[in-house]
Length: 349
Ligand SMILES: [Zn+2]
Image 1 (tube, rainbow, N blue to C red):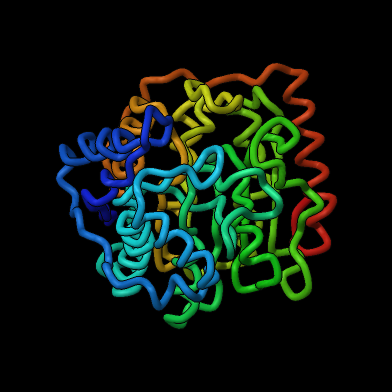
Image 2 (image 1 turned 135 degrees about the vertical axis):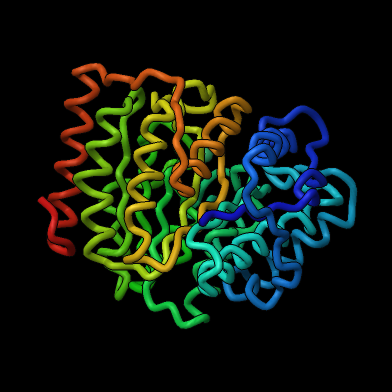
């Protein structure tokens, strides 16, 4: 069973002027989900104990004092409003609540419909020399992974399907073999945050536990699914995580104007089905909203997620996209290169 975690406090993280990352994103998702008759719970409220295990105190204080003022931009992309600090803590609290629900056996999947998003924030804000924090305040998924480890879980996988590389998450767990990070994203040469190359494989004990699959612009369903089948599922099956956290971005969809991949919801359905089939091997899957800015895609994609995870019939009213042969051959070379680099750590070919 899948449950949703949400709080109206997420609407109080407000931009000072029009911004693509705005409260209507989560309201459009929730109006689609309210019709679905699934459990909706509120986040855990006291998260400071866990927040400090991921973020520097100086960074947390800097954000808290920005919230005391009026509406400010802390960098060219990222704003803080008076309601941001509560929203951002409750975004972390939603992931923690989802983990509690799954570990208690009450649910086997959870969907944290949260904002602000998190995967671009590192320990102290901007991660890996990125120009900005890309709309993110606290790294929700990272705090969730650390919380899960403290609850007796030994192996957590973070799957990042957002179209942008999760530079913050990569930075935080780069040396940590207990947290496997796998990201499929648009080629960093062509898009923010400029990291997520194949050679970034982790360091020290964490070497081999960071897997990046940078896909060229215009990658469509067929080519993306090749990457899922040849890289993502085999590595997950070998790592055998006890828990999977998904950085769920809908911004790889072809209707998204912020990026240039060409996925339809058919590929999202494939990801959701693949994850549903892992339940049993894993105690549960926690989906955490990251990007996605087209309200139609957000609401239809979220409905698809809960329908698939609760084994309901579903319909996808979209044609699958076919990758142009020239782009497809570039995707093939990327997959080959990823396999070439990672076959020393995993049984992939
Ligand atoms: Zn994104």
